[in-house]
Length: 228
Ligand code: FES
Image (tube, rainbow, N blue to C red; front, side, top):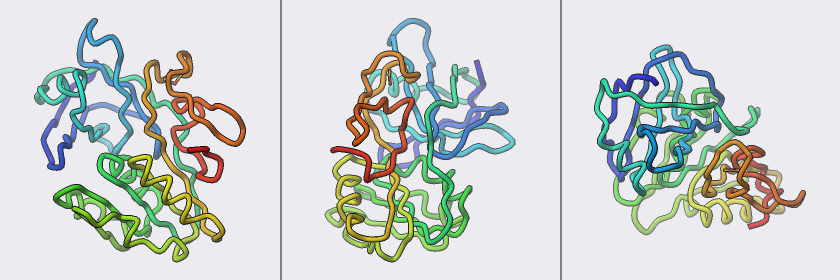
């Protein structure tokens, strides 16, 4: 069990939780989080937002029983973490755009820290949040809200690589936008998970190389390999 040192609401239905300790993890990997004993049965997969000398930070959205319990935790409470799991983003060189929608912005912060000088495109529902945090490491940070989608303001051909996370329709559109260009895209799939370690097959996704496990083979895949 690890001690929570921050758990605060940051807007757009998102919370930021920081847990004290020494943790490992690369951009795009996730941990399984659990703040209860027996029920709900499953731990919750949450991507790594940041790691520093104090601990590890996660962003999460309240979507059900597990995350409702997370939202009630206060500094000093304890939580069980297992990980890091999964294959994250590859470290690429060139002109890179990070494209996140909603809670999909979460893993892109560690990407911004790991590959400095990227441009970030962050799509929100009502208010743009986290802009100053991303500005620390990004070249430019562009945001959209409301009826303008992040895909409306991005020219994929300005970039060598797009690293993306967000709703499936957004990532499907981005992959299509990259088709026939020299721009390559990595996407982090948000398939529902149960075990998180490749044992249950709940998270299966279709790729050109057959069915893959989102939790173990992904969650990050090259966009051209995924069949939507
Ligand atoms: Fe169980 Fe992926 S969540 S195999």
